[in-house]
Amino acid sequence: MYNLDQFMAEIERKNPSEPEFIQAAKEVVETIIDTVNENPAYVNAKILERITEPDRVIQFKVEWEDDDGQVQVNRAYRVQFNNALGPYKGGLRFHPSVTLGGLKFLGFEQIFKNSLTTLPMGGGKGGSDFNPKGKSDNEIMRFCRSFMTELHRYIGPETDVPAGDIGVGGREIGFLYGAYKRLQIENTGILTGKGRNWGGSVIRPEATGFGALYFAKNMVEAHNDTLKDKRISVSGFGNVAWGACMKATQLGAKVVTISGPDGYILDEEGVNTQEKWDYMLELRASNNDIVAPYAEKFGAQFVPNKRPWEVKVDMAFPCAIQNELTADDADLLINNGVQYVVETSNMGCTADAVEKILAAKIPFGPGKAANAGGVAVSGLEMSQNSMKLSWPEEEVDEKLKHIMGNIHDACIKEGTEDGYVNYPKGANIAGFKKVADAMLDMGY
Ligand code: 2IT
Image 1 (cartoon, rainbow, N blue to C red):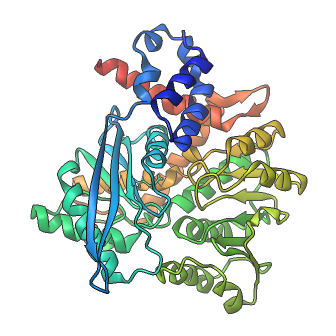
Image 2: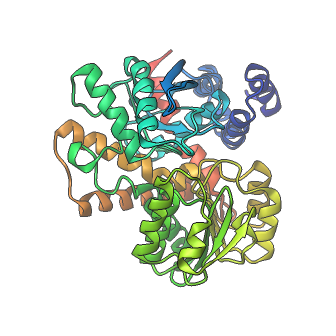
């Protein structure tokens, strides 16, 4: 039998200086420990020790030349966490905050998220402390080429299939794929999020945001409610926020905020036109990492150095980065009458924030369920690559909706307690069981 405190003390001992990994492990373990203890096969197989230890971690050096001819050195990793259900699958993050512990948290989350999609994908994550801010396209290309020179040895379409994450979008995937193709003389489904002309799936760029809104639609409908006319705050202004703004608008809701490291935009008209969505992409592509110019361009309000959670809304969608919504922010949202929180970034809410939201009995969609649409369409991209076919938009969108509906059903099934749906618990148990059962089947 496992004891939570003892188990977590051991995790902390083994993973010092990795607070985010410890936070993610605790969040999962505390919700699944009863399920594990009720099943002697899990306990005897030491399933918790095995599922919290990555299969392997690859660390490598990335040397590249900047536009001034100076040599630059970055550190990079690929965490291959668990491949019980399929090839390692998960994004690459290029951000100055990247550490091994951060990528271990993301790779760990990815195991359960990918399991929830029901597609055959294991969990992994990678990235580098490279900061894309202020870099030219050529600098990004040289960095990506050097990054792939190392990474190509460890990945493959049946081994490990990276994709984008923060700081890695279509442009970076293109450069990475180009480098891989040159090294291997092979066109293969080695990355997802590829361009449409060379193996990418329709809707992959939009999928994380679209999926979060499909999940949210299921959430509100399960509470006899509708998305129509809901007032929504979104954080971030990248790929995920962009998809969320588009789909929220299409489903009749109104997004009134987006944000960047410099502050947030309050747009009472709504982030609701093609021009505004296109401008978000332009802002992101500029590599300046600021959102303020949106206010000037569209006559909206810019609130410097603040997070959007002080704005009164019906629904909040953190779409930026881990731990971006704190306990104080949760208090603000709850006092302002928030009805739903849909965590669209990975571990976007601190543990204290989640505790407050759950205690207030506000439906809370955890990242590993709500944001699974991105990796789900990555899985569909892998299927299309294997078949050497590409599916039309309606087909991919239909499959995405179906997958998000299934994830929501799984949360209801495993997470309902006394009439309240504890979505994080439901997602963790449902995601865990499939992986754990596969691990039992395969031995050690
Ligand atoms: O966090 C995530 O799920 C992603 N960055 C997408 C991973 C993927 O392989 O598409």
